[in-house]
Image (cartoon, rainbow, N blue to C red; front, side):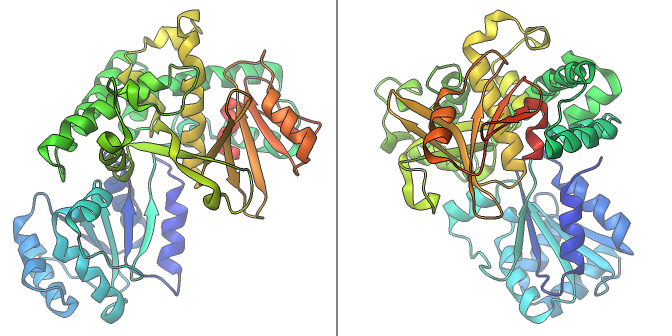
Length: 432
């Protein structure tokens, strides 16, 4: 499967400033697959260790974190040669072996000619909760997200459509009406399937939504089971309650996170650790509100006001047990949920595009769904609408008053650019 992160891995391999790489991401987003595929295409061989399953390899790192001792012992254990620059050493589920994580510092300082990639599904949680010795400044880090809509199209053999979307995004010219309609159909399918590679593969091979939903439910079960790891018994229940409540929050007109919807009388002090666990695990994205749309946005972040979104839109709809036909045929039964679902989809596309997102609202007056700073330092405002018959009043008023370079309105409308607002169809969110 084509994944955009492959290009980043290739840059890492060739960089003169290369350090051991830590690949982060939620469970089952494809970390192991992409590393093995990358190794097959760029190295003579790969030596792979899974610390959750291989106790003998784990013991090697527990005995010594010195690469000069680790390399020959690991080569003997695996009965493979480990050659500088020609072998990829892959340390999978590294959170299960703290000494291996520490060893990355010494690989960087004393043995950087060896190419090392480490991966871990719950690494952020493990480091935060168990105070692991993280090799700060001694590693490169990258994050793998679920597949975005562009990767989804390419997986289905429709890469030509992805190129067409990018062309229209750049020149602001409307998509042909028949193709616009077809792409909205693919977009609705993506809302159901999401970007988990196993689910995309199932859709490509079977078009069977029942099988896909079974696969999604299995992933959700794995996530719930993971919540018992690196967590106290008291926090396990809170973390599961919070995760289940996220989808309910997105059905409200006000999609900002409210503790009272997790538990009657719930407070931040009771659930803040649970939210932190979910964010560190990569299975949700937290988008903070800013008190002012000014640079630097981080200085205006309100830590007590935020939205939470599922990392994958397919898992969100599976968690709510949404019937695929209700999405495919735009059932009015989903009217209360469409806004939150569409915001979640857009958040996923922007996070995959490595945007640091914020939101803004003026109580009872106006709201901007997403704000980010682009590569040129400009603040870009993004308004999200689930249909084509709604007005972006807050965005229009802000543009008229402050005259930013441009703003973006995402909806089911075709491409266009009018009065400083770039209109982008929802299926083109990955272009932003």
